Structures are given as structure tokens and as C-alpha cells.
View 1 (cartoon, rainbow, N blue to C red):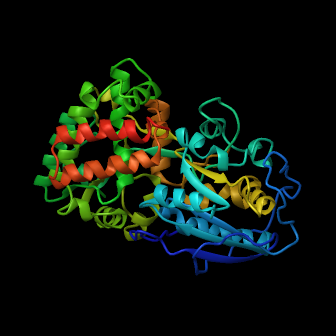
View 2: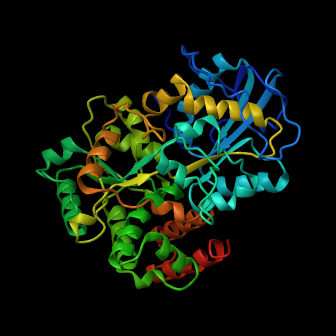
View 3: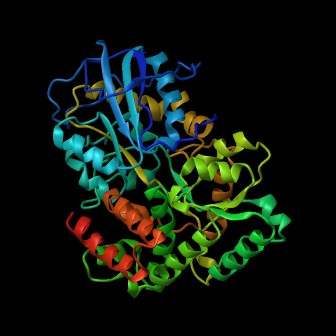
Length: 459
């Protein structure tokens, strides 16, 4: 599947008229769009009798009435894949209209505004882990639903309430591998035979690539979420070197019991890495978003991509089908063993527990996770690490290499999930100010410390 290059603040909302099921729900402001037709109409799974008693949703639409499901989620990089999924469901539930809206920038703020106004989407997204508790009061407990039989145990664990380890308050578009994507052909041409696994090796590689006439890095620093993807690698190293787990380290930082400057991996290594990315990266790093990264990498201009993963593979291959894609962890210290990919499910999709179209919404998510089309969608259409139990082998180079690296060197913890996206967005904005030169490193660290306590310490 060829995904669109997306850089707009708010992706155009997609409305797909589906023909089955429910009553009228809040649809938000959307524009009509279309997706390619699906040819798989099988295996709806027996979801029409799914239990809704644990939600207290009151009267909900029945399965034989026309209805609208409002889906408002982040991750616009999956817009085309989601539209194909929705179009396939049209064949199964022809009276259901799914109004799909997606954005990335300001998503946490926009979502909270919707929740506060009562315009709660029937399906909405958050970070997994800590944010499960943040949105628990709005989320239907999917325990006992048909999809529970297919969801991976590790993904299900990320969807439980962190406070008591119970419930199943979300599903995932994807499992994920986080790391650095690079061009093997450029590395070979420059005589770099192994991916640099330490910060000193990384700096030397950047200098070599630059001398050969290539741009070493493309950064995407216009997007706040790119920074959380990079930061978590250094957070993992900081926790490991301090003899702590990541959850403990994050809890200390958000409670003010520790500071960024206490951890060299954060205070020194992370900021040094950001400085290198600016030095060897895009001419205007704060103006480069996802589409700019994909263009620079897909055309062979840049050798490495920061903050991205398997979700860009289809796009860059559409630019150059012969692109030789490599994947590895981030060099975070002078210990090569700490250059690891990160594996896990970082995003949760919640079903609103008081939805007026609760049953049709449950029917949709159960079909997604149990039907032949739905279960194949993760590999064949979205090109992601499946969050379900599957024996299907991915054709994506990034996922294959992520599997191999995890098997040989292990995977680092998913540090993203211990903080909220409200915090991550603020963090990204702080680092953008540092890159712009409006604050120095010490001011940035002081702001990180203060905002971490104010935003997540108060949760």
C-alpha cells in the first residue's frame, strides 16, 4: 500500500459510508472521501452478541439500524491504511458510517477539549501505559470480547490499568519497533561496514558521510512526537546505568525526586546527539516534518532518518523501490550493547464506554481483530508489527530487521508509555526551543524538570 505523505496539522477527515448497523452518533466535522474497494467480505466473527453490560452505556443503537461511528485518533501516517480497513468493513456492515478524523499536532489538547465538551469520540487514542489510567473513566473494558483471544499478551498488558493491573481498556493499531532507519547503500559507498553503536562512532560516521557529499541525517524536528521517539532510547540507558527500571526513573523525575542533570545519558548524551543532528541534518530542522524526512531519505539525499520506523517504509519505497533500507538502535553512550531497538505497543485505541453506538463500535473492533481481512491488515496493508498473535511473516525490511535485532541483542523497554502525551508534547516544544537557540541546555533541563512535575506529577 502506498501511504500519502502527511505534513498538515490536521489531516482531512474521511467519511466512509458503510451500509450496516447502528443509530446516530456524534460525527464531528469531516469531509467526504473514498478509499480503494476491498475484496474480502468474510469472517465477521460473532460480535453482534458482544457483552455490553459492564459499560453502563444506557440505550445504545441496535445492530439493524443505520448508524455513525466517530473515530478520532492520532497517527495520520496510517490514514490510508485506516481508510482501507474502513472500506473493507463497508462490505461487512453496509449500514455503518465511520467518520474518521486524524491529526498529530495538538492531539492531546484537542481530545481533552472534546471530552470536556461532551463531544466524546466513539473511538479515540492515547499513549498506552500511564494514559490508560488518564482516560480510564471514558474507556470500555474490553475484557471478554472476542478480540481478547487474538491480542498479544504483551500488548494486552500495555492496555491494562497501571494502577491495579486489571482490565483491557484499549487495542492497538500496531506493535512497533523504534530505532534509526538508514540507507545501506550510502553506508557501503562511504566504507561504513557496521552501523555506529556508540556516540563517538556515530559522530565519526556523520563526518564521513558528509565528506562523501551526502546529508548524514534528516530529523523531522518540526514534529513534537519525533523527540519522544528519540528521547526514550536515552531514557532507557539512563535507567540501566543507574540500576533502575524505566518506570522507577520516570516516577522519580515526575515527582521531583530526581533531575535530568543527575543522569549523564540525558544531560550530556541526549543533548550532544541533538546537537549532532542539527549540525549534520536538515538546513531548516524546525521546518522539516514527516514528508520532508521521507523525501530526503527516499531520494537518497540523506543517509539516516530520526524518530521514524516501519510506518515510513511504503512511502520511501514508492519514491525509490530499490532503496536498501537498514534499521538499528540509537547510539546512546559509549557502550555498544546499549544500541538497541525498542519494541512494544505505544498507542491505545479506546472505545467510549457511554457511546450511543457502543454495540456497533464493539462489532467493528472485534471484526478488525478476528476476521481474516482484519488480522491480515496489519502486515499486508499497514505494514506494522502485528499486535495480534500471528504466524504471518512481514515483507517489510524494518520489521524483519527489528525481529532479528530483538532475537540477537534483545530490545530496550518502551519508555514512552510511562509518560502522557501532554507531557511528551511539552517536552518536544522545549527541545524545539533549544534547537532554535532561545534557551540553552541548562534552561531546557530546568524546564523539563518543572514541566514533568507539573503535568505528569499531578496526574
